[in-house]
Image (tube, rainbow, N blue to C red; front, side):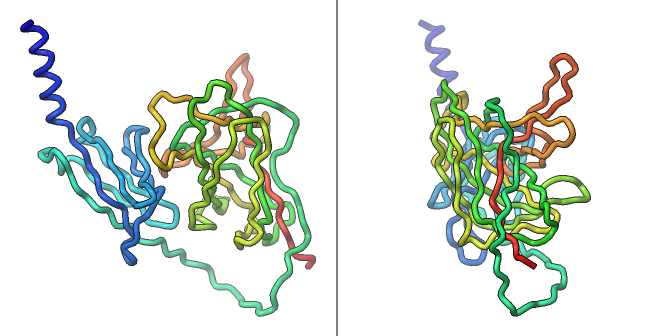
Length: 295
């Protein structure tokens, strides 16, 4: 009986020291709530999303010597040192993010409206049925080279998926578009600064997304398209098997794929094969129809 009482007391004590940080993420100018903002620990791959009201809640009792990174497409990231809250049980904190300001190179304005009507299909589209899974919060990004080396306009793009038979949760997707940093050979600045969220099916198929009216342009050096597996309402559990799976092709010459977790640093590659000195990597099957001018 005494043993049982001790266990109950221990649980009560642990519960009483549970610490949570919660609040809203807001635009610093308009004060409007921001959804799908990533709130993540810097030293561990653990995080949450803000919901459609901008609200978030994160349990920090075991992470008081860590730092939270708060990031969203189109906004400057903010960092919160958690040790300042070690003597507080529940922390109420509204976080305000400022919009990114992109400095553009000097351009010559041409008032003649260009017609983009010459279509080229660009991307990985080889035969194969290999699949690779992902997790909530992970973004996979693929480089699409520009064969004409001139500015083009995206008409639509596709992602090839494979069914994950044992999936218990189907992720939503947040689609992102980046320039290609030719110096550092990785995704660069954002070309489109809004969330583009779609809900895929957990089956083998090609998901096509129409972008014709969105004015997303491919630079001369090509562009990178990122797909983040998201859970907008934070409904999935820690060990849930997530679907669907990406289909990918084997690559021996060039890696075109990167990945990152909730706005952290890009890491090269998504799949590497070490079996019997197999040095291949895997490039995810992503492609696009791009319109160019006839000039």
